[in-house]
Image (cartoon, rainbow, N blue to C red; front, side, top):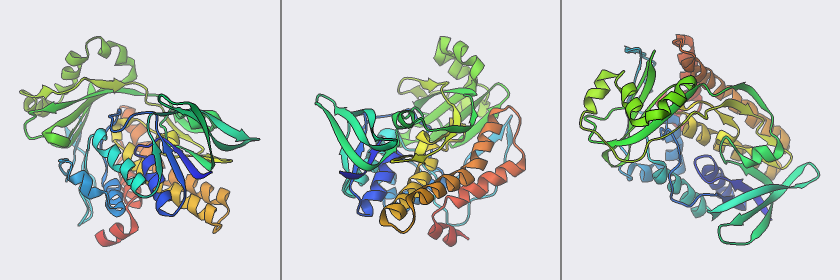
Length: 375
């Protein structure tokens, strides 16, 4: 009998498992994929997420992976710079690591903290006692079907979460998928920089990542997705061409891997808890990739959820009350981030007040000790 079973072992699940294990709880973490392996991602970790890695003792491993620091992001709408407030003095830089690098660091940290980890493990269904989730039924690749029980099952398995489906978690504040995006990894990009460009014809995002490469993504409204897919390399370079400065620096660039993309980018909040279950990361809250918030949001919610569970399991608070606070705090911080994302997708430039709300929410995600040191 486990205290918690975490379904999904990436940027939401592994930190949640790690933090619970560090507090002495018996944790099982499972994931259907082999490790290490890549996954579709924006890769970007905003400063608050980096500060959490630092607090967890994991930042040095990311830095040692040959992933360059990102001190600033050049953000432009139709060529005009959108200047927000500067980062506080003493802030850590951002990073954009490959997921085949970052995810094993997180999963290994969970195991080192005492969590049990089974990769290549597919969850088939939730186990119920009445309306309460009490465990999972699943199968290890090449093995027999097994059942495992826990006081709580945590869905950290992405926007199409089997846990969320199994408990029929309610959605709210939903918006349909509004855009598509494709990216690739490029070598020989001259002076690779962190930059975001929105134009009337499409958007381009570029970040330096591991091994001297740049991760460069392009996108546009969902209605152009089918046409884009008819010739992905040509249409990709066409959108890059809307940003002449980047196009010039990619003159001798080489695509190192296949193009990866999707138009499956729904925007929603889900109720993230119920009898015997909880959701964290994209399973509980998802927004378009355009603001690159997925990893940072996942780190935030892993801390919020693990704190709530510890309060409930230890008897310091009623568990449902602690989890209700997890949901309300998540929504309060994520709301301005979600609103800015939707506004950017609308085709109309955001108001300065939205950028200010974004900055305030980002500051609220900073660990208290770093926020105090920077103030």
